[in-house]
Image (cartoon, rainbow, N blue to C red):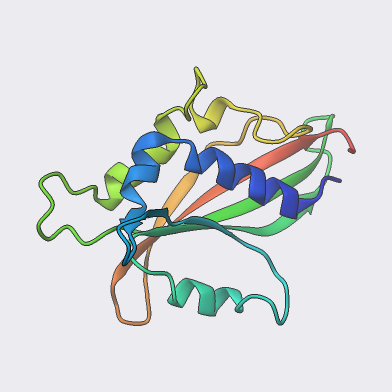
Length: 163
C-alpha cells in the first residue's frame, strides 16, 4: 500500500498547478505578496489542529485536501486499495469582484481545467506513481458553524497492485 501522506502532497501540488484554481485561491498578504491558499492537512497530533478545527479555521478563499481513509478489497481483479480524499473549500468574498468565482465554477475548474503542462484534467491523470485515474469525483454542500456555505469534494483513487 502507498503512503497516503505522500499522495495528499502530490494531489495538492497538482491542484496548485491549475491556473484558474490557484488564482481563485490566492490573496495578497499585508506586504502585497500573493499567497496561494491550497494546502494539505496531515494528521499529526500536536503539530496540526484536529481536522474539525482546521476546517473551521479555513479562511476565504481556501482549499484544503485531506486523506479520509483507505478501503481494501479486490474490486476489479487487480485493484487492492481505494484511497478516499476530501477537498474542503471556501470561495472568496464576491463583493467588489468583477468576475467572482462561485462554488459551481470552483468545482468545475477542479474537475475540468488541466494543470500547467498537462494535456488532460485531474480526472484523467495518474496523480502519484502506483495510482490509477480517479473514480468519478463527487461534491456535496455543507454548512459551517456560522451557517455559511462551503462544499466538500471527494476523490476516490484506486491503487493498482500492492505497492
